[in-house]
Image (tube, rainbow, N blue to C red; front, side):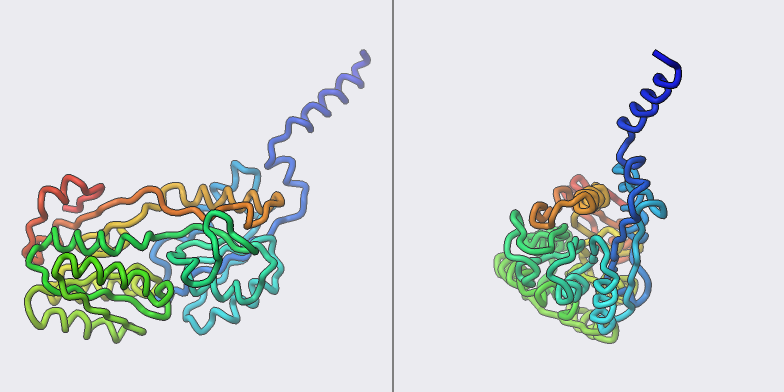
Length: 330
């Protein structure tokens, strides 16, 4: 065989053995529309796109090379319709949305572009889709919280402080999933079982938080259940400072609160979330439809306790909670 033929054969073999990242590099740049939850005081954690981009790299999608994201971050709920319209108008290959309001806004603008959601707790109740295992239409994604968690939060509060007699559930009805109704039902049922008075505490802006905490502190036995939504995440420092000042035990759905002074949290971990989202993005960019991809629910949960905060509140954390905790801040 002539040397030129050998070189040509080797070149062909190299081309056939290209990894997806190399094979896709010559293709057009794929575009992701990325609509974050509204953040009035900045995000509670690092931008999700940065983490997802790292998980896309092994799948063949190189940030700035053959894939890029157009990031939209509203600073108020009122901006969401215009931002959703702009994101859809850019005609990206897929749109990623964070939170229920953002997902609803994008869904109102398109029934054809593929949409992947994050941090949506009740997609069926909010009429985002009708079936989790077999989504119909153009939307699928990743739920964040199981409705049964509300009962678990209330039980943990009572175990932490058996003297608790009244518990307020705090959320913003404009940002909580389905106006928090599924959580409220579970909350009220568990409260009745524990002989705890349930209090619904809706706050539509930051000024509505302090009256809730002050009301709980007006007599002994008050506690706060902070429903995880975009509003309470944004103002978690305000909530933490107020509950500390008025000596009110509070439980949260994310560890962000506990690492910054909150008492206790229990909720799903984000372990694997960015990798799974990257996998769904990859499949859609390669031709899959959202209807081919079932909605995924959380699989791992973690319990975090801040002993410094417990001591400041005069609470002795039971050994059962300490033994079950995945993270203890001393």
